[in-house]
Amino acid sequence: ESGITRPKGYNVSFHCNPDMEKHHFGMTHPMKPWRLTLSKSLIYSYGMSFAMDNYISRAATYEELASFHSTDYLDFLGTVLPEPVPRDLENSNPDLKFNLGGSDCPLFDGLYDYCSMSAGGALDAARKITSKQSDIAIAWGGGLHHAKKAEASGFCYINDIVVAILELLRFYPRVLYIDIDVHHGDGVEEAFFSTDRVMTVSFHKYDPNNFFPGTGALDDNGPKNEHNPGAHHAVNVPLNDGITDEQYDMLFDSIIGKIVEKFRPSAIALQCGADSLAGDRLGRFNLQVQGHGACVEFCKKVGLPLILFGGGGYTPRNVARAWTYETSIAIGCQDNINPLLPQHTPWREQFRQDTLFPTLEQILGEPRQNRNPQKRLQEIVQHISEQLRFVQA
Ligand code: TV1
Ligand code: CA
Ligand code: ZN
Image: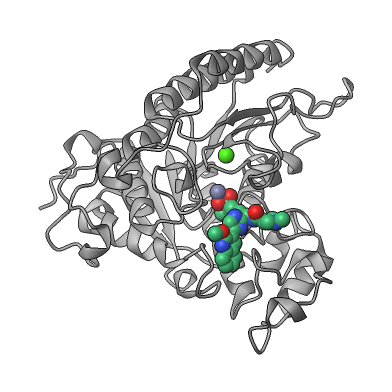
């Protein structure tokens, strides 16, 4: 009935957990787990579940989380309770253990469950890949790239990506991590700073004094010490406000193309943070659903085992559109997708326009000024080409 068929010998698995989506960071907090419900409902409305293996993911165990995180941190995360009353800023406790309990990483009801479910989905996806049951595994509830070994950061408490990549490394010699969230993927970069088995690549808005987390300059490329195997294995693509689909996709194809050739990964982990889309509440770019999705399409065409993670994304209707389109790319039905949203889509009024591909004018009114001169983008590609001369597969 949906017209979507499953191409022979090509498996996509979809991992989600409805219980995860019920958690709340707080009324005004930009991170809304409910955006996962909205995304899933659009994906299901298009009938895509019939072309994938669908799994309710389990919660990751303490031992699984401890493959990356320190037990001190996990023990604290498992026992802290939310503040009984919302405290005002004057009386706020500045002594934040493990960076927990501030405004970015608040303590909320069920926090530990939320974290272990996000990591559980990522791990289930990784295991579908390593067992060769799936060619592409999707975990939109994961992608929380800022979390550190013993610290929460930027809405992220548990680094599900690191945990999943560690699982991939049990089976594959080399993993390529790519991050198209508008923020720098600092937690994943740091976790694999000293190994040449993982190359991390982040595209992000870079403005050290005014945009979180402030790291990820073009020449931050791994340990400066030449004898450290991780040297040159961190790639950073610092960008300015207003970058367009055309520029971004040119950069992405050219940089990822060169990296795949040189590093020769055995699998790809792609963080698809949707806050790089135009109209995002926190983002600054002019990307559309098509340009964001083109990155997924490029990775799929490389033909290696692929995990798609979620990540940021603070305007839920845009998040739902992007992750729906990207799910269709994973399945391979993107050329047949009806750009008109299905008539029976739940929460249809949330979407404002009834198209999967709103124009920049529809999203923003006036597009954001593009502060990425072509010359600077060429310098970035040039720097990365030179960096890759030091990389040996
Ligand atoms: C509560 C209520 C928290 C309203 C946080 C925006 C809020 C932000 C809020 C916010 C906000 C950030 C910082 C400043 C570090 C702080 C999932 C020195 C309107 C992957 C994380 C961004 C992005 C953190 C996460 C950032 C991800 N921006 N309103 N907080 N301090 N934190 O700048 O990469 O998308 O903004
Ligand atoms: Ca990024
Ligand atoms: Zn982000």
